[in-house]
Length: 253
Image (tube, one colour):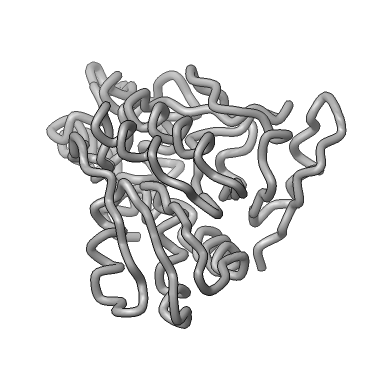
């Protein structure tokens, strides 16, 4: 396991527990306590956690989003499967929106085969990767760039998005409750996603199994508001909406 992979695991553990000790993490990750202490120092220097007396807690600023480089290392195999399955819903001449989630990024390598496609995104990483595809017309929203997520947010992004028509949007959130509520932590990006959903004809939610059962402050929408859910899990075995929904579930394999 590389250092960055270990950092991502430490942060993931902290998201599920209020605080953890050095000895707990050392046993969990099969490293020495001194290694965990050095990891604490690195992660604190990045503004991602606070530690004292051998215990660590997430920094409140972490709620604004992990750096995309760390998110890409979380559940990589599942995200690759979900990205491939999501691309199967795309057709030539579609106008699609790809959000700034690391899961949606996994769609990009499967878009080269299309002859004519328009992609709208608020993600700088997506914009850079799509710039190499001559067959894809790319629009970005502009606005304020969030350094961690590399996402454009703010009123300028929202105003631009509110004037656009989108055939299909592909997005993810930080968590999904077991009663079918999509939840998030980063308010600037949350408002952009709300606008995206209003402007989109078909809504596709990308959800790896690590998100299921996790609840956060901001309620985006419900499962019944979506057209498709793509997940690596047996989705409706884990999520039980209070009423039947017409949403199509796709198991990514």
